[in-house]
Image 1: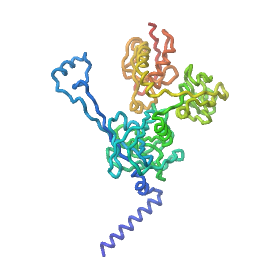
Image 2: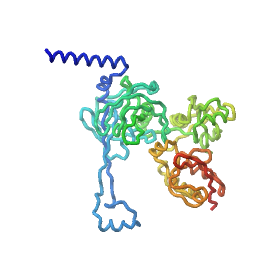
Image 3: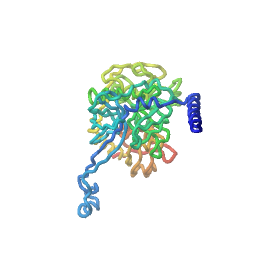
Length: 464
């Protein structure tokens, strides 16, 4: 009798706490997880790392090269590197969506379902610019997710992630939408959903659900200083990912529009100087001479307010809108110039594919090295982690200093170049293109950050 009493008391206490949770608006995720978890998969990859020498990869002029060649124990010529990630089934015949970085350079991909079945997967296509990949396994009658509409998400709304953090399959974490439309450094084509859902290594590529059990995003990145979750995670909106995977499925590649401009954020101070009532739009800092925008009459200092009827609230909106426009389309740009609104029609060009960029990378690097040497410095691009740590959107790290840069300007190794003139530095190639336009023997102004302080320095270009 006493045992029955305690059982009844325990049941009533459980009902009390459930009622209390419901009264406080706390959600119950159990139904969502039971229904949607079977469509979430674990992805494991294997990459073969080849060592052609059989000993540490040293240049032949290294003093230790001959020693290792003769006396060192031979290292294995091949070794396996393994990694884990997550994904989710988007069609019952075996198409799976995940992150591009989860399967990048993989020689073997294995997909494991929640019922423990394993399948070899092939990559249909991957797009590094949005970090989206499409996989295919040979299976039928698979459970699949339901696609939601990220536009309907509200900040503060509950969301749920399911994935395999550190290899723990079908782990469920929950949180709220912290912000929408986030722009991250060097991520121009994705308006990220920011959440405080606990995301850790292995969650990458997994789904983000709304409370209706619909997928609204792909968990892609975290901001961390510890290597683990710090309550700052970012998901690719599912509509962006779907546009990419549809192209990958039909053509195996992704095409994007371009108009050939460089832009910067419109601040309140700049808006006042241009005569705008509020800081909105994308400020054009440079126009490619023979690019689509240049041919249409777009000029530096124009402010693009609308593109093809879509409002450009901030500079980060423009690359996404243009990239989503079909190359060859003729669209109207509404812009602000010298105190009045003007409209021009531009024929959208096609953004070079990653293969073209790779083929031209060596030539561009050689050109950059030649022109940057006129300043007497060697610079390298900052990694995503360095940009996040410094809390900046772009810049170049000074690696070596000599000549006028050291003597007259006092530049030091470790300085960060933030701008050339009044144009923010976004990449090494952009920096080089601007530098080419400065005549020899003339001064160039560089905004340099050292520690927490930033100031301009003037360097005269080498006349040789």
